[in-house]
Amino acid sequence: MTPLAILLLCCVMLGTAFLSGIFGMAGGLVLIGVLLALLPLPEAMALHAVTQIASNFWRGLLWRKHILWRPLLAVGAGFGLALLLWSLVGWVPDKPLALLALGITPFLVKLMPARLAPDPHSPAQGLAYGTAAMSLMLLTGVSGPLIDRFFLGRKEGGGGLDRRQIVATKAAGQILGHALKLGYFGGLASQTASLDWRIACAAVLCSILGTTLARRILEAMTDTQYRRWTDRLIAAVSGTYILYGITLLALPE
Image (cartoon, rainbow, N blue to C red):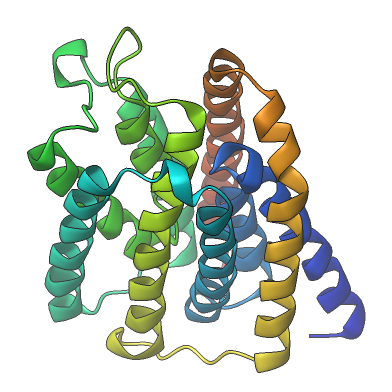
């Protein structure tokens, strides 16, 4: 990558870390789209994993008092189960398929009937959502929308988690998820990813700075504002990825 491209990438990583620092999501969605446009899929997944591990670690550290350990353990067990299953397959999807899956999944979760609405206090649901989310992460690079829907719970009276608990608990879970993804694309997948250590270091620094700057914004928001803007961000970014994936499928090779 040229120095200008690296500089622009650092700006993107800083901005997406700031966005994730507020909502605990969306930043990863934006970043993986940019990385998929600039790098081959395995390298994009590896760099995204490093960036997200740093961002989520720092976010979890800042909000550590709000982490809920029971749902975190259930989701983590699902992550491990999915990794075991997919490591036996070792399949890496092409870019258009990854983008389409990334864009469509949040809308499918949104359309779930009320009786199937997620409950973050249910260990069985945590295991199921963790398995599905890790599968999505290994196929598309992120699982944020699915995990967010789990921690948000029902619209009316479900879950009972405030925005700090959602952001903190998800951050702790995503550390494990992205670490497993890094191992998968770094050695378990059929395509081995290589990563420039200088870009990786820049990614860590940008993630820490962006997350730190976002803390005051999250503190100033209400839970209602958090939920409303979370839904809007998911819809906007996911719709963009669907269009991008369709465009890549339509273009001649």
